Length: 158
Image (cartoon, rainbow, N blue to C red; front, side, top):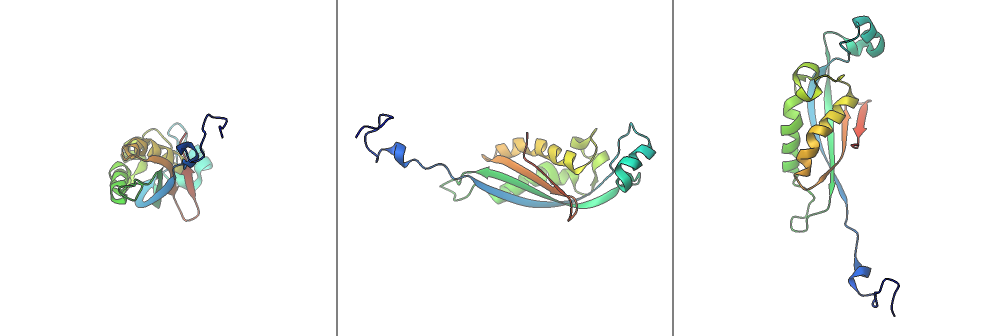
């Protein structure tokens, strides 16, 4: 029997196509860093009013937990989406080594000129990581950055 799209046999390949399985894989990394929430164009009083104790001129720190989620298809020859050791190395080389035990406001080039909020950090981390992740033949799906056990930000790109 002829079908609407010109196929005549339900055993033809068009009827047997399966959508690719999209797998989401997350790697957790940790780092410690100091920062201060403030705008240099505001007075200390205004910064303190807006950011509270997070505007402390003597800084404060966090034990951050970074979750990087990538997505892709399982590579049949390998049995996985991406080598976790390689993914971890990319995250460490691109982000962790640059932020761990640093002052985010003063020592981290990709945070220069930005308020060092978790929201701005997660977007900046995305911008740094995305091209490197793409080279692993997977797609960056999300970045989650935990500042405290009660506060975290997730970002899914633009």
